[in-house]
Length: 193
Image (cartoon, rainbow, N blue to C red; front, side, top):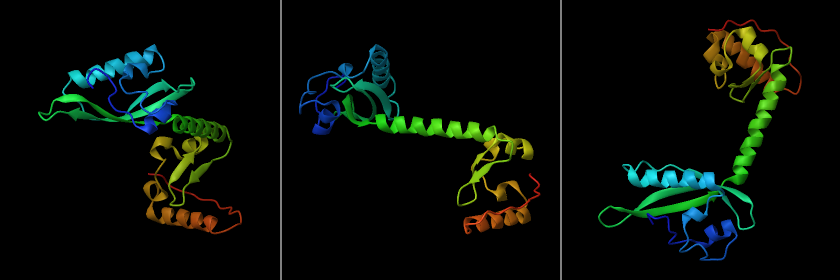
């Protein structure tokens, strides 16, 4: 409700916290945050939703704790609950445990940073393309050699960076590499625009 009282909780929600069915009914959402800072942030967000012109829905991330003390990172997807006159009388919320997803995303970002650091310190030009020929990674030496910033290269293909004739040749070489088990050694002279 608009005071933060939990009026309905399904079994999945109860299991998320390691509780018995119905344990949350009648309790307050103010009991969910993992610490005082999270509680203050949740109170401010709740007040914002009720005192402004009812902003658009967007997922809200809150840190909470499982009954066993384990930290949970939860995504709250919500909608306004209204009475027959359209007045907000509460919220309908679905909680999703995104703890593992966030951990894996952080691991992936750390790994990508490490790879970028390694290739940036190599004394040769390094680039990686996907199967469609889009640049996924370039090193600092590549940026310095071609004189184009990485952010202007990533996600683009050779047709975005070279003349059609040059791009056709590079793409042909790329396809030869993809279709072969042998190493292709070639020297390319390209003009960047």
